[in-house]
Image 1 (tube, rainbow, N blue to C red):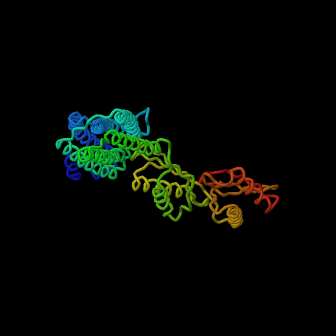
Image 2 (image 1 turned 120 degrees about the vertical axis):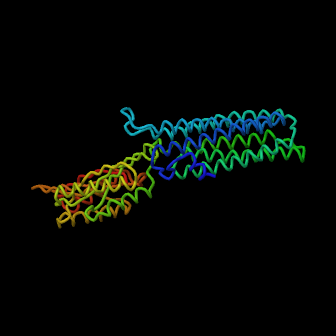
Image 3 (image 1 turned 180 degrees about the vertical axis):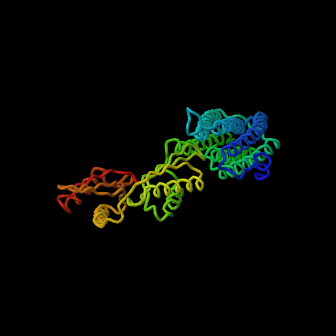
Amino acid sequence: MTKLLLNIFVKNNNNVSDIMVRQKYGTLSGGIGILINIILFILKFSAGVLTSSISVTADAFNNLSDAGSSIVTLIGFKISGKPADSDHPYGHGRAEYITALIIAFVIVIMGFELLESSIEKIINPEIINFTSTSFFILVISIIAKLWLALFNKNLGKRINSSALSATATDSLNDSIATAIVLISLLTVYFSGINIDGYAGVIVALFVLYSGYDTAKDTLQPLLGRAPDPDFVKALEDCIISNPKIIGIHDMIVHDYGPGRVIVSLHAEIPCDMNLLEAHDIIDNAELIVKSKFKCEISIHMDPIATNDKFTNELKEKVLDIINTIDPCLGLHDFRITNGPLRTNIIFDIEIPFNFKYTDKEVVKATADKIKALSDKYYPVIHVDKK
């Protein structure tokens, strides 16, 4: 069914890196979500009135909030698909993350409202009138929501969308919540025990957790989370596959929304290489990365001495020093400047986040050990976070 709908409504649906194709995915998801949730709201609200069940009515309004969330999803994808302009030179891709965050807030607000209503029903319970119509409505709702969850999960995976993944999670939680409501009605029918209010509380808690989980996942890219390690490793391997690029460091990945990633890094090349040749190597590396990873990239060229015996031997000694402090430390941009009175040893030391020692402690320990090698050595150390 998913493939059929994509073929009908989304042309070139395999070209998921295209912004307009992503926008059509979001439109398809939002349109189907609005249609299904409005139908379910009407059916469940009618069933809630017929049975006088707060849990059924709560579940109905949960579907209404989902319809509203689908509208927000549509708007979010429409905005995120807008091209870059003078005020937003990196595009509007983060609107998709903001969309998911708005959905999360709507879900949380609805959850608190349902929780309040359900507690009221526990305090002041009402007689529940079980009907076969309400039973079939709830069964149909569970099936519809399970399909909608799988549908949105599939779309979310295809285009790597946090908004669609959030919608899929919400639909799955809805199907579980509706199953709980159905169990409460069956319990009333077969045993006469009214657990409607308690079922409403469970539904409300499901809704609240869904909102919290969605908000947590959505805030990460907005706050600037670390890039995917697999992406970083693949990008590193791609660049250093050129034997004339010795190593890379200082990689920064900026996420401006799905399909809008900007990367900058430093690439080390031999300092005695012809300048035009070095420039061509860096340009070619940028073109390969842009084509393969569908991202923008800027590579800074770092010339390093590779044929100077004294420099190489001194670098190995400094590497041994920092390894004695902790093997997880690293260094790059190693170079020296010789003067009549002292030799400046200049390099960047890579220190992980949340390291057991402070940056100052690591720098001091490293500098002291280097100075112990010779009173002429003067270390100039810059800290980088690994």
